Length: 313
Ligand code: NDP
Image (cartoon, rainbow, N blue to C red):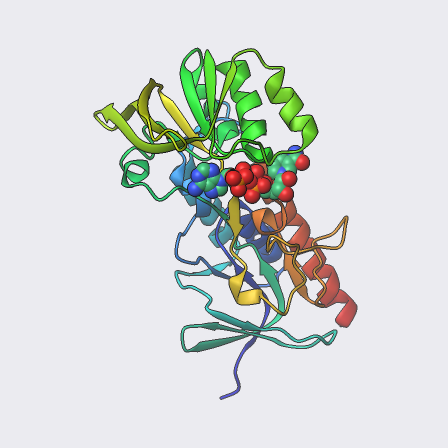
C-alpha cells in the first residue's frame, strides 16, 4: 500500500502548535500533530494564566492547553501522543519531508515546527519540590503572585536582568544572585538593574537549597562561592533565569539556527531556510516567549503553509 503523504504535520503541542493546527485544519490541510513528551508544553507547568486575552477570570495553564487541543480536534486535527525522534527534510520546493516517531515513518508536504524551548534549571532537588510553590522560570507568568513580597532572581544575563526589573515593580525587594563578579547582560540592562532601588545584587552568590512549609517557599539557602559562607534569605518566590534551551537538536545541520540553537525564520514570516518547513513559537523566539505571541506565530505558520501548498498546486 502506498504511504500517505500528509499536507501538514505539526511537531509540538504548546499554544503555537495547537493554534497552527486550528488554522491548518480550517484550511482543510488535515493536520497531524505530534505532541512530544510534554503534551501542552511549558504552559502545563504554570498555574494561573492571567494575561491571555479572552479569559477575564484567568485560566490555569493545563486547562488552557486542554481547551486549545479540544478546539484543534473539533476541526479535524489528528493528535498523536508521540515524540518525533528524527527528521530528514527535502531541500526542493515541493519535496516530501520525512519524519520518524520511533520506527514509524511520516511523510509530509509541509512541516510546522513548534517544539518550544525548555527553561534551564540549576538541577537542585529542591527546585522540583517547590515547583508551583514559589519556584518559577517566568516572571511575566508568575510575578503577580508575589506582590509586596521578597523574591530572588538567579542569573546574570538579559533574561535575569529583565525579570529582576519587572519583579521590582511588583514586589517589595528583589535579590539577584550572580555567580561571577559581573553580569553577562547588556550594558543597558545592567544600568536598569543598578538604577532600581529595590534590587540588591549579590555577586559571587549561588543558590544551593530552598526551605519552606507545605510545599511553599519560605527561604533560600545561598553560598558565597569565594568565602564559602552560607546564609539564608527569607523569600516567597525564586525565579530561575539562567537561560532557555530551544528544542531543536533533531534539526541540527538541516535548518538554519542562531548561535543558541533557535531556528531562524525569514523576517515577517515563519519560513525557515527549507521550502515547506515553518517554525512557530518559542523555538524561533527567544525574546517574547509568551503564550499569545506563540499562538500568533502558530497562526502565521499555518497560513504560510497553506500559501506554500497553494502555490505548488
Ligand atoms: P544567557 O545565556 O545570556 O545568560 C544566562 C545567565 O545565567 C548567565 O549570566 C549565566 O552566568 C547564568 N547561569 C547559567 N547557569 C548558571 C548556574 N548554574 N548558576 C548560576 N547562574 C547560571 O541567557 P538569557 O536567557 O539571559 O539570554 C539568552 C539570549 O536572549 C541572550 O542572547 C540575550 O541577550 C537574549 N535576550 C534578549 C532580551 C532582550 O533583548 N530584551 C531579553 C532576554 C534575553 P555566567 O554569566 O556566569 O555564565
